[in-house]
Image 1 (cartoon, each protein chain N blue to C red):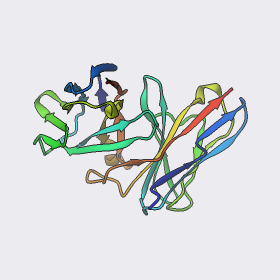
Image 2: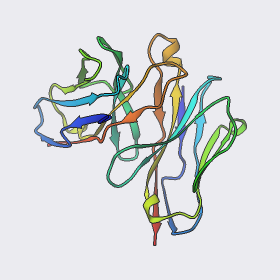
Image 3: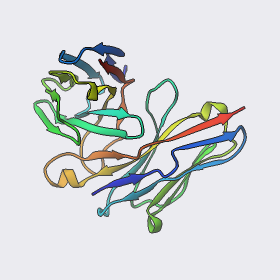
Length: 120
Length: 115
């Protein structure tokens, strides 16, 4: 069964520090998608990135970067020069295409989230 | 586009009461789903729908009913609320289903308390 593990539950850093959020996943599927979502204190879920299993290129978007390594089943997220506005809960998620193969529909399996606090 | 909208934002119920959480999207998305978020549990899928007239159960469906009479709307019904259903509920939608699906977008959430 699909599983996503975010081992860190809470991290606190000082502004301008770099921080890496770990995500380890389990799946038997060869084709799948990985996601990161941000949930700021206001509560909404904001999509950050989607990565498919065939694309292991690292991605950078401003201060955000993602390192996808199939060999270790990890999809880690790094925030460079963190800011107070980065304070949020971050979720890693994995698509579950098995359900689709069984006649259902692909679902998302979420990790339990990691709370990041960036202090001024 | 308003995206995915949910009403109400907050709700307090007494045990045994019923209510419907509303969810609507204006993006013509085929796939809609309901999740609940509990502390330390992440998000768990309650029910989902791949199109009008088609629904299926997710990971934690007990105590909830859904229907999908239109593409735009996907209400979640609590027939007899229980304190264990105290949670934050998120509705989500995306364009289709399958490995090449688009990204799932979430509504703002409904915070439900059952006393």
